[in-house]
Length: 128
Image (cartoon, rainbow, N blue to C red):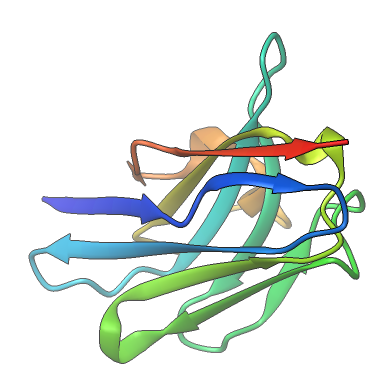
């Protein structure tokens, strides 16, 4: 069983930065893809960013492009989300997710239901 543990959330002023981390533990960890999703109060969970574990290729939601950067450290089984120029609308619980196998459809990585493992979430609050 794989466990994902997020950290790095907190309270920050608009325009500030935060770096989230997600560490994977458990049996031999070699995912196909990892991603960050977020869920604001009263809203559905939404895709933020994804990274292919072997190639390192990335993709982002339009709302965070140019401000957020996803990266990974394979040796540490860790994925990061660097968040810059934060806005109040970025306030949400941020979740890390992992998928073990290749996706069957194009851009399926934006679909939360395509992931096998989830972390418990970390709160990010951006004040105006």
